[in-house]
Length: 494
Ligand SMILES: Cc1cc2nc3c(=O)[nH]c(=O)nc-3n(C[C@H](O)[C@H](O)[C@H](O)COP(=O)(O)O)c2cc1C
Ligand code: SF4
Image 1: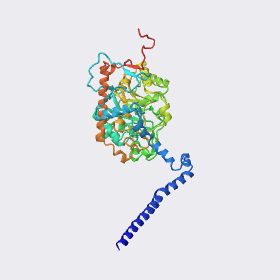
Image 2: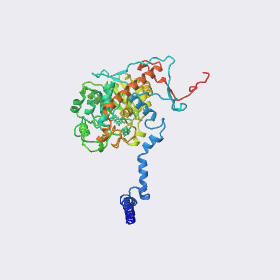
Image 3: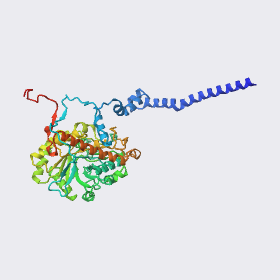
Image 4: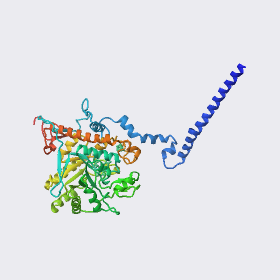
């Protein structure tokens, strides 16, 4: 009897195991193998992707690795001095300054100082004590009734739409806390700019977002309504930007939700392209008259324009027209071709416009030759991330500077370069609520202010090391360009 019981039990266990084996094989077959076979057959006969026709199913690995290649590059391959557009070392310095932790670098430089790209500051034997002051620059010529005292480092134009509501709010609160300005970008003035309480430069682009009529033309009443806001300190007319000069802005349909469309006064859920040029003017005099009109409509606030230099003769003609008409902008923002963008065609980013350094030297010289500087202030932008870069650009000819991507890094951007997909993993450049929630404004606004404060502090230290106490004493000869000894034409003995 007991034997029979044992045989029955063994039989049952074996039976269950065999059934289980066949059932799971059956399940595997249904859940995994059959769908893969189906997918393979589909791949073989679809006509869009050659790789999948030739390597059904396996071909997806290629797409997967292509998708995560920026992360592989950044996490496993990139060296400290690598990484574009902003190197790992420079990203790190932003993160450290934003978190207010030590931003020192151990063991010495990783750069090759013996190549021709080296640009070192010439320090002085008679180095000074760094000034504790936060230097300010007064903007506003005789034609302006409400001059503005600006910091030397500010947040460059980035629209609500390109950036999320939390990113805009964190930047603006940071600007308020640190006493510097925040440029709205061409995507209009939103409640998030105002909620933070920080100083604002309202930028008007070719789409006249926030101050347009139903045809997309400039609407003076809508302009006056917003320009009179006490937080709006200056007005900037955007002619072009370095990353895509001569190409209008692009707001992808995926990012153009109801809220953004309302702020911009456009149709929601459509791709919004702003025209390449302005409908309000088509020559130098028209441009200056429009600048003057914006200034008086704003109640006399400093008004200027932003451009990336293309044809030098056009800029020279513009400056000649300032002389002949007597109409002067209060500032000119020079954006280098190396500048950033939320979205631009690659050809424009790589191959159109003048880089910042030559552009800045040209603009400064052209204004000075006509006696227009220092009345017209020069603002510069284009990859100004570190204090050394800030000192360099101020020495070359800028009165003050703007930065866009540095402040994006300060609010948490990891340079994943997906800004145009609406899938920014850090909530900086997306309109998806589930991603935006990751960016905590109360934490990140402090980082914006810290980054600014620590960068200014480092700038003051560098200036003091060069024996320079005032901004006016900075000059181009503080820099050694490339490494050459003896200097060209000289001898070692001489
Ligand atoms: C996400 C993003 C959005 C931008 N949007 C604008 C804009 O609306 N108007 C504009 O004039 N420039 C815009 N820019 C350009 C910046 O204002 C700035 O001129 C340029 O990025 C150079 O600064 P950076 O090198 O410090 O980033 C944008 C840049 C970025 C990265
Ligand atoms: S994390 Fe990536 S997608 Fe987001 S803002 Fe930075 S670069 Fe753009």
